[in-house]
Length: 300
Image 1 (tube, one colour):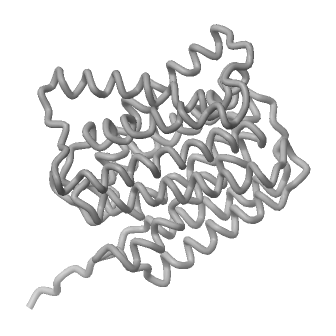
Image 2 (cartoon, one colour):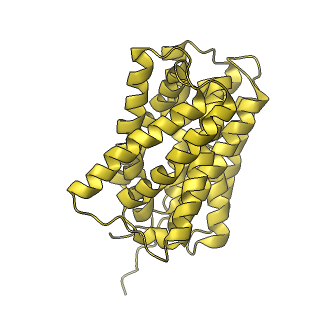
């Protein structure tokens, strides 16, 4: 598939829609944690998603993509996937959707910095560095509000860990043979490896269930089908087409949606620092994704 050196209208639209879905997913995870313990719920999600993605690959007669060159990257990717969602689900269990989401979507900073050193053509210009600084400053301002909503240092650290895990996966997709695999195969192996890891370690975090109701089951199915089986495949495809740091930087829009959804759906308190921080984030995203202007050749 043709690579592009900037985010075009189609890519921007797809990334915004994906951001809204992921933002709503944070709310769903928070609600679902009321019926299933966080790590156990993450494991069930991987298991259900694995079945759906596996059937999709078989029905389309696609390759599972595993060979000698991809075995180790697949294993690393699966472990990172497990780490990412252990952290994210725990974060959403002990802190508010607003706080967890803002930290989780700091991922573009870590990816952009890594891409600067490891991916040709994705160096950080002065403008993009300023954008990253503004965005991270916005995150810091938002997190300085310890009054609005739940506040937990464990939740904050877990949210940051989830962001680092996500960035690691994104980088693997660009610098290892995983980039030669189709999106469905990449996701299949992440789910295949993460499902047993998550389910095996889940008892270490306490009882597996918390009086699950139909609402919690519905939330689990939403995560498995619409987020895992559809959303992540689209995201993996986008990161193969567009610059990694450009794709990731759109994730900074998701905390905006998360704040609104957390307030509307869960009634979470949103302090002034949260809104100020989100303004900084939005400006940072604009600077990161602003397309370089090309010079028009002069007629001679």
